[in-house]
Image (cartoon, rainbow, N blue to C red; front, side, top):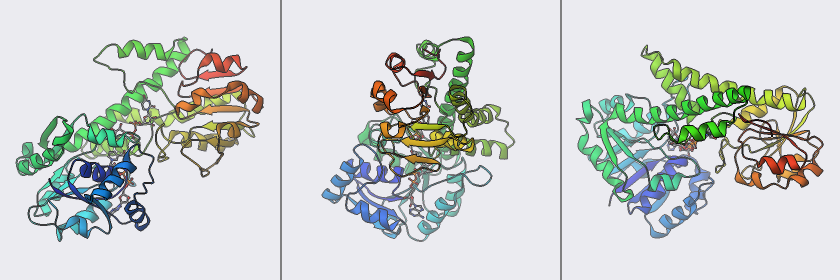
Length: 427
Ligand SMILES: NC(=O)c1ccc[n+]([C@@H]2O[C@H](COP(=O)([O-])OP(=O)(O)OC[C@H]3O[C@@H](n4cnc5c(N)ncnc54)[C@H](O)[C@@H]3O)[C@@H](O)[C@H]2O)c1
Ligand SMILES: O=c1ccn([C@@H]2O[C@H](COP(=O)(O)OP(=O)(O)O[C@H]3O[C@H](CO)[C@@H](O)[C@H](O)[C@H]3O)[C@@H](O)[C@H]2O)c(=O)[nH]1
């Protein structure tokens, strides 16, 4: 079993640390956020991630996992260092590597001669190669593919493990890359060992492809409305072709979260910097920007001019199953609605503080009180079970815009509501 240092205790770093401890390795997880380190040392996990708190408690209990403030202890006396710090969007759309570079600067003087530095943060193609040229230690790329809300499952049962070493076909650090792949042996996942630029691109190419699928289906939904087709039937028909598959075909208020928006922009920026025209990716991003405006249009069509309209927004996180509000399409839509003068209340099972223009209330019923219309923005399953008779007695208006096609049409309409789904005929 290996000694592993993890730098950054966010969604990826914390999951990596807790899961490697679960797989039997000894892990030191470092962060610069004092409050986070202190909470984690008491097994208090802030993020809404199934099983994560349990694994953290287990790791602390067995002594295989500990948390430290500052990176030194996670860089010295370990066999592998996993860099899991943010790579946000920079001013020009490219990934900002300030956090990664700061950690690598620290690592340069601290890690032992046999330690392998593993870049797990999402970084542009060429980054690992650049870093390897100035660090006298093996450096490999090992992108992470976990989904928020499924982080532990995705880490312990990944569909693939990708590791890339610098040089053509990973020649320079192939042995180090194989050692990193072996850390995941307990997961049973197939491993691809390749060059680092290819590994880095697998990450961007996957996220951008999924985002493209979603922009495609969001445009398709609009077309379905115009021709009177039902997008659910259309996508079901498509999904039976196993070359297409059924995943990522649900229309919505746009795709968001901490990864798709920044990774699509970063890949486009990489392409532009190399004079590669990638109109498909540009259209994927532009289509997504337009989607929040389209939702506002549907709400306007349903309730009339938005100035002074009281709207209840159900779901504020970027998708169900997470408490993450980063780049949430629900909040992008809220901002546009507020700009037209709507007065917004909201409810989300994982959000308690007010969000921008949205006054957050403790239940869907309270958010809906006296509302002119209700807008479903995140697909939390509990919204499908709302008591619509009850909602009708609470609300002033009778319009429900369902951007996730989540609600049972018969129950909603039987209670007297006018239901506006996305890409389906109005019931
Ligand atoms: N969130 C996801 O679902 C996901 C999935 C796959 C890949 N990624 C990628 O992983 C990387 C990290 O994303 P995240 O969502 O975990 O970020 P996050 O913001 O949740 O966590 C990052 C952590 O790093 C810490 N940090 C910042 N600078 C540091 C430093 N110098 N030393 C030590 N700690 C430091 C922060 O305090 C924070 O706790 C990004 O490149 C992201 O694109 C994210
Ligand atoms: O059919 C669908 C599926 C998803 N979405 C939206 O797409 C966005 C992204 O969803 P998801 O991919 O589940 O979220 P993340 O947790 O951000 O995960 C993505 O981003 C991570 C960070 O890079 C990767 O590791 C994961 O593999 C990748 O799925 C969200 O706004 C979803 O609501 C839809 O609108 N319709």
